[in-house]
Image (tube, rainbow, N blue to C red):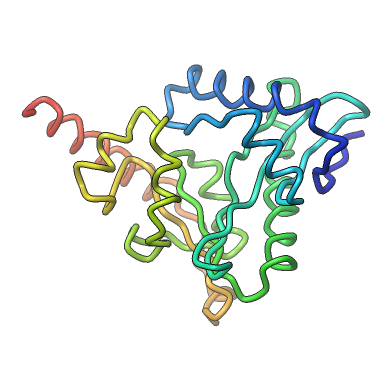
Length: 207
């Protein structure tokens, strides 16, 4: 049975497989997932800023927290599920765990993420996130430096951090409209993603 717990020093041994799974997933899907080093993952575990999913002693999934602007903004990043545990709803359970933990550890913070995956967008939307422009996310330059290992980083720099192939999503605890969400529209977001890809492909050809 898979259990999702707050990661700590006892989970350091999983840092390598977490990084390998993230990188392999990015290569297989052709998406722009930023790479992370084992040392970086260990830092998150040390600071109790991550959750890990384990099936006994076997690694199943992971996600970590990044705090910006003195805790005013929080990002849930690095969501990954091991191939052996995909298509079982584990990603949603991990997101729900890290989302609740973020609210507990950083009360009042705006929680955000950037992603190209429709499945993650749907999970975020169901948690109360809404699509936003990058200008509504943190302006901390350290956050955007974390995108440097993404294959689409040149797109981000060319637009002065205003847009990329990723979609920004934000949960604002002060927003009273969370209970009034419309049904998740996968087709609309898929269309938005296609338009972005076509636009940047056209720009790349010109340059």
